[in-house]
Image 1 (tube, rainbow, N blue to C red):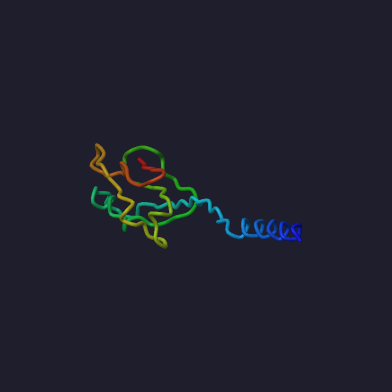
Image 2 (tube, helix red, strand yellow):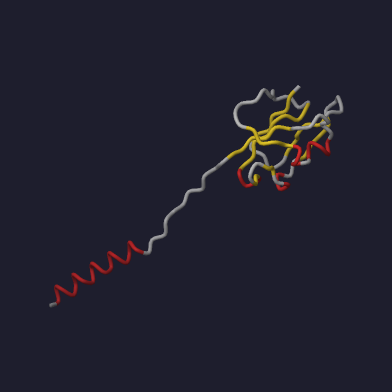
Length: 113
C-alpha cells in the first residue's frame, strides 16, 4: 500500500509542477519607418508627429544634418500608421534655416541634403 501511495504522490507532484509553469514571452522588437511629409521643414513642422507618414522599404536619405527625411521608431511610438506624440521629436535648424531631426525616441535618424 505504501508503494501505491508514493507512486500516486510522485505522479501528482509531477503533474502539478508542470501544470502551473508560466510561459516566458520574449518581447518582439518591431520597428517602423516614417518619412517627413511637408514642404516647409520648420522646427515646429518637423517636431509635429502628424507631418510624418509611415513608409516601408529603403529610402533615398543621406545622413547629413541638413533637412528632415526619415526616422525609424519602435512600435511603442506607433498607433496604426500614425506616429504618436510620445516619439518626442526634437528638431534643429541647419545653417540654411531648414530644420532636421536632432533627437527623440527614435532608433535611427536619417536627414538629407
